[in-house]
Image (cartoon, helix red, strand yellow):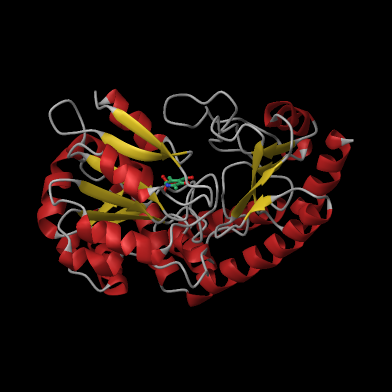
Length: 382
Ligand SMILES: Cc1ncc(COP(=O)(O)O)c(C=O)c1O
């Protein structure tokens, strides 16, 4: 038995142990969204020890972890860490091209889909390129990247059914970039497929449309669809996806976008070389080869979501219909003191979204975590 095989086995055991305690006691806590967010919408990492028993329902992560195949692929890749990751880059790009029915030159990988959002802000927004139009509320990272880039940022409130107000967004656009998060974070709501299809078809070519499908796998409404098939007819369409959600790889950092190759050629020069590390690449390829990962992730999320939404309904709080791995509901009072009170009791929920000051965003964790949330929530509301 050589040193490498011992260290691989040990690493696998450590990951296994970490996955087990992560049910209600994450061994450590990565970046989280907090009440007072820094510019890109995320706070500094918080160290929480196993003994504190923090229930983390704040960042829309997948509590079930990565695929066992991804864990094995990572341990098998230890020895390749001395090499630059280009070989694995190709493997993942091939797999994603096949999965999405596009050519390999239609894909850019990112250090999380956050890097894709940043690249789009840099490529398509700014004083000379155009403004950014986004919903309010929505996932704010791109808004911050665009404004740092000197772009005007226009926020258009969601409609009364919490979909994107596409007519108003189109009217507010000045050539730059329109951001559509579907399903939308933080509301977990969708923008109906017919409306989105029509909007993309009629948006002028000089205006780029970025559709963020981070939560694609969790949406099961007949009114929802991915717009990746529309990329072939629309040079101004970019679709972002991530391995952070259903694939359970938030801490590894891997995402990508699909667009026509001329659009990809505009985006790529803004990117740092080799921005995706070899462990994330190996894990992503292996995850795509594990059909159980998506199926189980959807099923487990749906079961825990059905449980917690029924309980919240019984308590009389109105929820926005959720098409994601989180929910948002009206707590009928300012949410900030509740976020604080829950945090003091070791339950972390989503931050304040100023457009919806009485709404709480709650990630769907494991059923045991949701039970802890419910009893703690009842305490702080009493
Ligand atoms: C809508 C949306 N897009 C993108 C991201 C960024 O994800 P990542 O950079 O981990 O791929 C998130 C993270 O929560 C998100 O909610």
